[in-house]
Image (cartoon, rainbow, N blue to C red; front, side, top):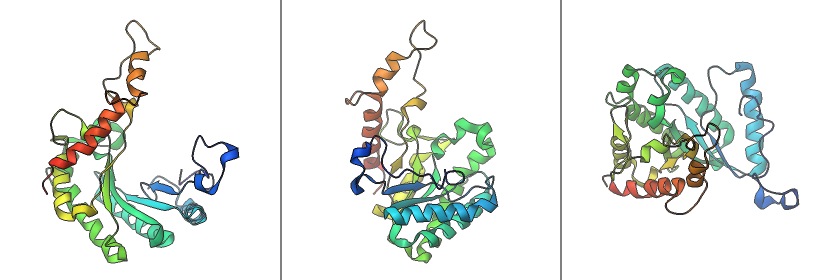
Length: 246
């Protein structure tokens, strides 16, 4: 979106009717999970940023700004440099928080796409890179005048999977261990953030004897009762933080 459609961002929330296009329906919350990417054309960067910043100011929007945690430290450093540039353009009054890393709980499921191997996973978790990088980024963020702005890392649904009281904490994604350390270090400044996607649920199945129907799965993913897929994930996301130290 930032690279190719920065001049076509949504003005109003989806499902708003034209007759209801009022200031209250304008989009005022934006997430930029990274400012730029190495594979995007460098020549487009500042023109795209100019359009995004204009949109933010026109809407008086608040922005959750992000930077990466990955298998490649140089790329993470470049991502953070771009994010710092973007922060100076956006202005402090529009920054609602900083996200460091995106859906690290499911990285091991996308080894080919994300160029993840066992050495990378060890470095991210048992090797301590994720925590070390998080602390470094927050330290620099604070030195820019953002000491009181919330910080987070956004996780997917695997982080809250399982029947234990803890977050997912296997060798390929030690989420509970990481969150324990982050909550201890940052207290209430650290906020919990999740992307919950029912359509990524590994338990989703086609109907018996069907190759193009999934009414059973849809009945669990489109409903909002407490027994349904998304409400159960949301309940776990609210309950599990209570069992972190502090």
